[in-house]
Amino acid sequence: MLAYGIPGDIVDECVRMSESTCLLSLYSFCTAVVEVFSPEYLKEPNAADTERLLGRYKGHVKGATVILEVVASQDLWIWHSFFGMAGSQNDISVLQRSPVFARLAEGHSPELNFELNGHHYNNGYYLADEIYPQWSTLVKTIPNPQGEETKFASVLSTTATGSTALALIVLAAFVLSMLSTSLAVTSSYVRPRPRATLSLPKDAGGQTPTQVHISTVGHDEMRVTWITEDDAPAVVEYGTTSGQYPFSATGTTTSYSYLALYHSGNIHDAVVGPLKPSTTYYYRCSSDPSREFSFRTPPASLPFTFVIVGDLGQTGWTKSTLQHIAATDYDMLLLPGDLSYADFLQPRWDSYGRLVEPLASARPWMVTEGNHEIERIPLLEPRAFKAYNARWRMPYDAGDSPSGSNLYYSFDVAGGMVHVIMLGSYTGFEAGTAQHEWLRGDLARIDRGKTPFVVALVHAPWYNSNEAHQGEGDDMRDAMEALLRAARVDAVFAGHVHAYERFTRVYGGMEDQCGPVYVTIGDGGNREGLADEYIDPQPKTSVFREASFGHGRLQVVNATHDDDQPVVADQVWIASLASNPDCNNPAGTGAQA
Image (tube, rainbow, N blue to C red):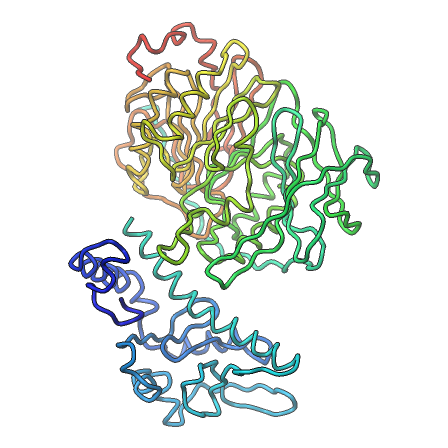
């Protein structure tokens, strides 16, 4: 309605909402935009803002990307916006409504000095459409480019102006997502301010494999996933000696597009095996000799060490967390959602893949989705989890309990001694849904005599005494908590809340010796910063909480105990419920499946 200047009764059939609901939604949208963005973005740029733009984009390599109706730079800062009735505006009326171009028409513009093709310029230029006047400061797309140089220039111009549309789309999607005891310890530690998003080198291009990561498939196979810019064979060659690859596996290749502005590289994956446990394998992808990788297969027995980290992102704190993870050995990484924080900007998925590749190519990374993976935009990108499902394929169709969905699945490690359940917070979980029925069947298949430890991961925490994201996991808890208690699940790990918190064994909001231990570990270094406001007084069920970033280590050491060590701030021994005779018949103590 804003973009096209049309009344609510025109879009009611398209979006299946009444005119009054459309108008109310539009009012709520505009109110939210003003409240959230007006202090920093919805203002006339001052001298400092202009200097910020000129300091970031200088010379002929990087130019400020703007159009007249919406003036936006490539970092999605909206400098000026104007919406009018479709068909009632022309180049002059739009220019008159823009303080940026009104001053330009008067001969005032930010000073900018650069050279291009031997000519010196002291005024900036703006990319514009064909309808605008013939000003020397407006550079228009070439309508019918002839020759390689003009075609290349036309592509660059079209791509650059497309980032302005992306700025509006991201703005809309962000605001829509907004509408959607004495033994207890609260640590006084306060995490420093969030660090900036990292700037990473681009992929090598051609057939060079990049963004390599692995995930376990069954008890003796591994899926290798990688991306190439150009077409390349989906082949992994591997062996136990560096430089020698007597085995090979051929997989599949896919790709995806997003908003017609982004086209992924070729996403390959191949399953290699059978593999020996606790063995280092060397491998290369697409037969490319320039890059050799290696991974170590997990052990087939206890002890077994997991790294658990949520809400990872790609900031300076993320880099610190990854360095800490790499400093100590482990067998597998579990990530309960919010991986890249791409948030609709698809190139951030690529930079995230490059950032985690050194670790993710060497140990299996098992992930589940978070809210930042949804990336659904009504009408424009109606399919949720498009990038996540394409890039991070998990073994949902393997083993004795296939789920049929990449958003939830389970697997065994340590020769079946540990069963791991990855649940989906953002797909149906109520009784009667596919996930609920699958979970019931998956838990029923577990023989606790052979599998002493069962852990589950979910993104939105079911128990949380932080002010952030209060109640967001309650509906899922109400639907599934009884199933987990009846199956004597030992621990549930969550992310989402950007802090650390450990609860005692809980069921139905009360201490229960046969309920799981609940742990929130949701701040691996994301760009949104920490959640440092806790509910006071601290609930009796909350044992330890701290607004900190980092990762956790869960070491299953024998058939009765595991050891959870999230940094040095908190550590606890967790006894397997399978070894507790009082929990052998949990249904008799009030649990209902």
